[in-house]
Image (cartoon, rainbow, N blue to C red; front, top):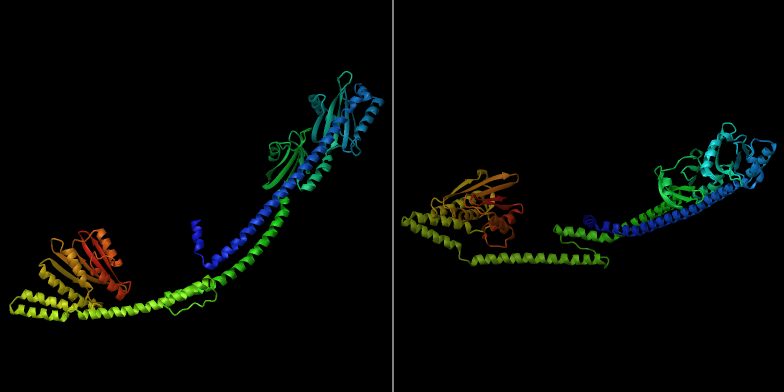
Length: 582
């Protein structure tokens, strides 16, 4: 967040205003649009789920009522004495055949969807009746299965899910069956069974309205997990045990989400309490939410249009607001480059207008201060000049030294005469202005005269080696640059060590710079003292190290610019090196 805020804070004012405007407009629009889409989606899902659940319950209720009717039909043989008697009679005759056939015809026409009704007597003789168009159902192929299933169920009816039967030669018909064993009401012994086959197309009229309303795909699954009805006939009898569809249907009714083939669906189911069959409809969310997404896309287009208009308006407004500010910034840059005859034309009395007014007053005040500084500097220079005039005339001192030297020669005192002569030379070189331009050769001669004085004072203590190329001798330089550094080397480096010392003055060229090095092999200084010395050269707030080096460094900078400087390198016990870059 901190990096993000820093990134935003570095934007120009115009960009910041555009971002803020667009953000303030975008945020509520996106929030309202998203909330509306979520609310509509959830409402649509809830409405569709509830509607599909009611339709599934209704469909399952219709199936339950239909099967309950069929189960009641299977009890009818128990109340027909003639049928009871004929089922217990071995063999067949016209009377038995006609009576049983009439009874079966009656049952066949009880419901339109009943395909065939079969009755088996005690001795395995099968009688049947079927709807028109069904020539031969081949019941003897199924007799063994009927006996097995009814034997397990006892006197209870048996419901068999959708399965194919062979009809009319090689054709197949999908049916589900209700069967029950028949006992004699007098002896309670087994005397036969009844089987009713119902065309599975019965479910179409029950399930298709559910598919039409929900735009889904409904199936009916029996208690063993096999499909009893599906739109695709190839799926009839398919075992769904272990599938995600069947695993989610754990209650008596409800809904859940699942993925089929990578697509999201919502499944709604209802379970029959009588048969254990389940009506399940899978509704694709893509199709269900298509109208909502279309509305969302329309809202998105509208939102983008609003954002485009808002962005254009934000850019125009931000440009109008920041234009005078940019003009003020440009004028500030001109002032930074030294141009002070600038003026902000203030049009309005807002904050930017107040800034322009204060800027104008500031520039006026700066011009006034610069004029005051210039006048003050002139006055200071004039005062310094008068102060020099009021000092003792250095020419008087030089003439007096010359008289002392002549007396020393008359008395044959050569050392006093030489000292007086050298001191006079040093004084003559120093009495002129310090910013006077001399040559490198003159500066070196001044250093040699100074060292000769010191050698008389400290015999055998100090020696000097000058390694400056002769091509540098004619180069111009401000005076009194080398001598203060040499003096510093003598009194702070060489005098403090017990043995003799050497001062080496060398020079070389580096591109556009001339480098001078004044090096001594004296006592040097510690890292802490070196750091303090370097700090004193820059801040000028301490007199701990005197003013010699600082004065040279400051005069170099003022005369030659900030790129010219004095650098100090030193190690304790190894000496000190002063580097001048000009």
